[in-house]
Length: 417
Image 1 (cartoon, rainbow, N blue to C red):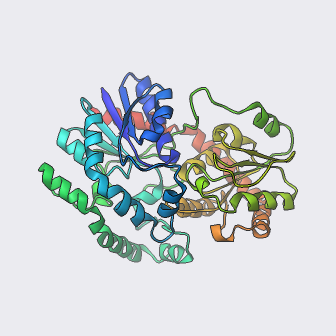
Image 2: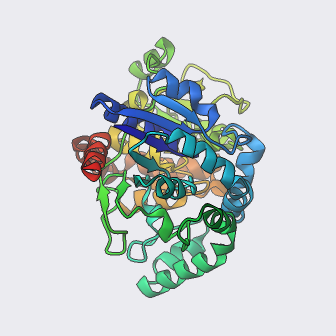
Image 3: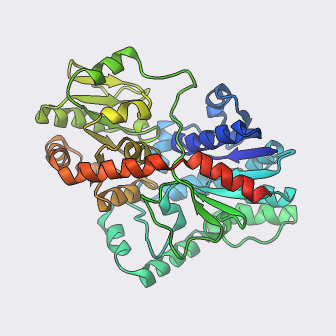
């Protein structure tokens, strides 16, 4: 059968879709990944089908755009109301074309047109939930920002968090006006709220994270299945570690690895310069993954700077991974069993950072406080904490037993029967 997997976002959104798509293809299904044109070469190189969807002008490597959507206060509104919603009709048309002949549609959270396409075509669909914060549970509340206020609200109890969710629901309802208008034009059923209950599928909701990271809650939507993390981290199927990086990792004490994923890395600020200084103050080796941009630092014998390396191949060598808290990076660190030190920027990252700390897997530090002396002090705590290392090893054992791509593919096939 033909299955379309669609998403909008960063590599952290795209990689799980590739992992699931490859597993479905292995089982004999025709799989098309519908996402931004930017990812065409990556998708095509895997042998999966590709279909471009809008908004056409959005690039995950545009620093100005990323600065706008990662703003701590206005980021969600800038991204959803100002950048995504005005192009809803175009995204709908693109996805409708991609789904020609499809029997099932699997969608990421930000493809708000996906439920409309599924309803119009009369096909089943599943939602991808890559991080716990997407559920907005009142029983396991998410921390939706880096400020201490959000952590305070989380601890205020179910009633308060349920009220906060309802307040957010009311305040953002007007953002979705283009969807309500499009539904009316297409003669589809009336919507409730595309960013809340309407994003949940009545058929299948795939929680694609480990149950070691978040336990199911009573207010999660019906038909939700926790399948575990799904991993893919290649630039292309033939890519891997360079000889230079491999030699560095295999010759010397375990390094501190610094990375900002694929989004925050476009606006790194002083992260890498302060991180390198912190490593120097500790007398530790470091590997810094700086992306395509130039953060203005140079490598040395004990401090290697490189644009990219597959996390699955480098994290097992790490003494600690210092990262932005994206769910993909978090998952890879858990699978590698290494301690984590999180410097969250936006989106799900503050919540993931808080979960890592609560689970005893590491520590976190606000971005505006990530300066070499303070960072070195916190890193020293992580490096010397036997309990963190033990918890990280336990997490690795748990995550290694899961296979999110296989479990998700099983669930999709069951939903199609």
